[in-house]
Structure formats: C-alpha cells, structure tokens
Length: 188
Image 1 (tube, rainbow, N blue to C red):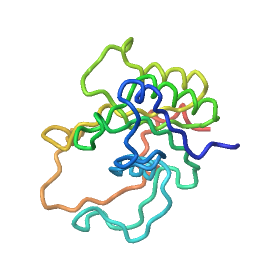
Image 2: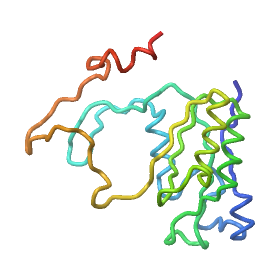
Image 3: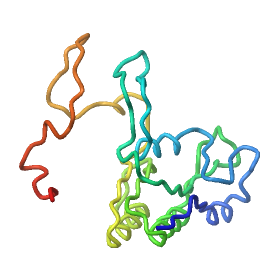
Image 4: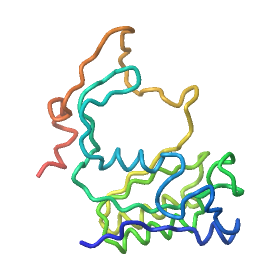
C-alpha cells in the first residue's frame, strides 16, 4: 500500500482568502499550533515511556490507539484572514477534497478533528457528507463533535458515578471490563 505522506487541500481557502502566508503557517501538513500533531499521536503514536499528565498524574507508558499504523496527514485548515490570532478557516470544499484524496489513497481509518462551531443540519454538514462517502467505501471514520474549550462544560464526563475527591483511581485494560452484550457483534 502506497499512501502519500501528506496532502494539502487549500484551493477553496486560497480562492476565498488569497494565498496562504507561508511566513505564519507551513505549506506542509506540519501544524503551527500542535493540534494536528496531537491528534495524529493519539491515533497512531508510538510508545513513550515515563510519560504522565500535568502534575505527574497517570504516569507510565503512553501510546496511540494503533501505534504500528502508518499515518497520512491531510491538512485543510489555514490561518483566517492571514493571521494566527484569528484562528483557522477550514473550507468545506477543501475538507471534501481531502476526504476524496484519502479514499483514493486507500486509507483504512479517517480521524477528523474538525467540528462545527454550532449544531447544523446534516444536509449542510459537509464533514458528515464526506464521512458518509468514506464509510460507503469501507473506511472507518471518527469525527470530532466540536472543538470548543477549554471552558465551562467542555470537559465534563457522562458517567453516572461521582468520583471522590483526592482519591486515586486505577487505570484498567478495556478488555478486562468488557460488557459481553456490547462488543459481541464486533468479535471475530
């Protein structure tokens, strides 16, 4: 399998905003703010020993979900109005072009860390339409539900249990706590 190592989708951006200012953003899949690098390492990062969260919490070995996977980066977001302070612009046509490129490249999984700022109808959600096209081509798709935060209510859990303050809780291997009726259809 020969994946392209990187794809830039910026035709729609440049049509609407002019050329990307290469002095403030990279004309490569490299990101200026670490977001793409972070999400790629979450998906396929190799093992890092002696890692921990801020403050030393959860120390141990960290890795992405599929550490032996190969990554192809598709960059579609560019500085809004030519400055980093205004955030990024992710044009719908560029996102669809990148999804089409990924399908053509034969990827197995798409992890899209782009989400709408507000709830929109499916018929207006280009990411959803592109994701459906990818799924129809037998590609697993994971899409962000939004990228707001940090802020109030952006990091809340959906668990029913309340954790006790100042108590350490162990990490567990997901395979040890499987609910048989939940994953039964996915087992080989």
